[in-house]
Length: 449
Image 1 (cartoon, rainbow, N blue to C red):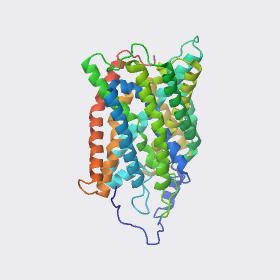
Image 2: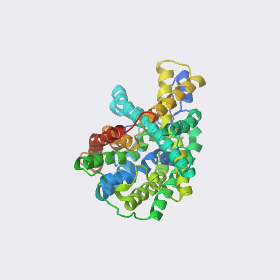
Image 3: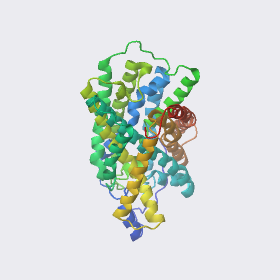
Image 4: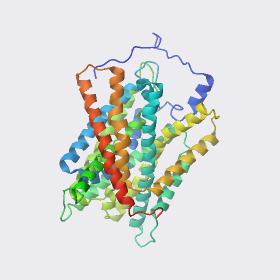
């Protein structure tokens, strides 16, 4: 925003000097994030759609019922604007030091906050975001499979959610072994197409169903404390819907870059396309869903819809395909961190069996946690405020202020501080509502039921 980056540290001819050892080069060529750099701008587009539009979009009408028309519409629009701005910052900062690429979120954090402090600030929050998303996607995949089964075969024997989560997890024990982001591009493209498809089905089928009799747009909870806690949880659910920042640098790392044609050009082009698609998914689903169902809307908008049966069943299967892609997209940076630690810190030799064991253990872990704690709405509210708000809403702004030092009280300075304040408020108050939702739902839940 009218500010200058750090001075150049590369030779005048623009050539980049590689100071890595032979072993470091071999490791970088093996690790998921840095092993392939031949992606196109449209890879960035559908990766960002897949990363952003996930379980959260189906929860937006429910979040609207907790927030009400005025606050709900305002928060939706403000969140979209803020996250476009902070994502632009991340794209700009990826190559802010000439000759160097910050391929991972924590590498940029280390550049801004220091080698150790950057790790302590970024890595725990990024891991919470990515692991919690993978757990929630396990739950969403299982719920959508269960709903599709109930619709297609209403007279069949009921199957517990536990088994549907296990069925959903089974494909990840295979897909998890795709080596890098470019290897999952086909899965990600299918997921992006599915996200737009099921979002369109969700709002179109809702619109076709019409406004329900006796509709009420008041707060969902009947008591004042319940309404307050619900409002706080709704904030977290909105924050959860904009979580793509946690993988944006890792996605940009797959795009080739030269001093003449830096990666930020095609990356930003992909982001713009992605955010247009995101708007087409989010706003109609959130506003039409709440308009038609009011505060009777279910946590997952597709669960509120039962007819036409074939269309809603298809939409639920589309959700399954999409969250398969989303799971892989968010698992890849976790795989990268784990494999980096094993080969660089513990000095393991890069090998297929190391990758096989590491990734299978991770998929099994997220599956078991999802089976034990399938509190969908509460999970969104709690994790949305606790971890998604910092990494999405204000940590990019803090790094921007530290690294670019914009003029005090200038436009850039004010924009960043407004984002920081809003993000911190969401981080502090949203998990309260989400935690209460988990506690309330846990009272009637039995493990593996």
